[in-house]
Length: 276
Image 1 (spheres, rainbow, N blue to C red):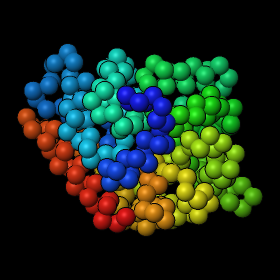
Image 2: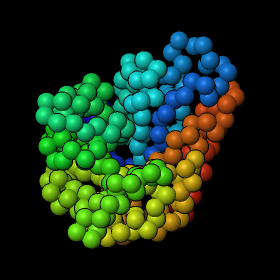
Image 3: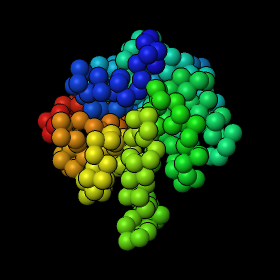
């Protein structure tokens, strides 16, 4: 975990909420077709682009969230590993969430946990609960790392299964309760609840107390920041990791792309803080 191996993910996250005064997470979703002209054709463009964004925005964020598919599709896994190392070295104390939505059984789940936490040195990882507790167990066992469980996701089709009624209540509420009650023995669990569902945010918050949420869906997906804070924040005004990716990454596409990203991140951080 950064330069201080004793600091776990939850400790680092709470410190960023409190000391840096920010609930903003910047998602790192590199798309070379949207890179500024000066990086096109550069052999190390993915790392150069993402590290420039990181350095420009680090003081405004509570976490960074690289999306593994954006790197893997480009054959840029080594750039991802170097990027996470760069964040830990240059911005110690800012945790990194590997967005990989893993969920598999037995030794395969153990390998995915090793990939996330040892190969990439991520501080937290997103996991899919559909295969049940044993598929998440290798992640949950790493008490110093965060395990961020999909609950009510921000995509339009999320309700197809997540809203299915079981004993009169939607599946996502059962997931929320089970994670809070049974999976969180190490105090390292979070839930993904999308900004596009403010009513559901309030319902899940009522079920799980202060368990933190990763909230995608503001910015390009149109979620309302005020509604997210009103329905999702804990009593002390935090408990949220509010992610924005494209709206910050591609705020500018000229030589000043990193400065444009910084301005967008600060604007977003300040808007969030207005409603805390």
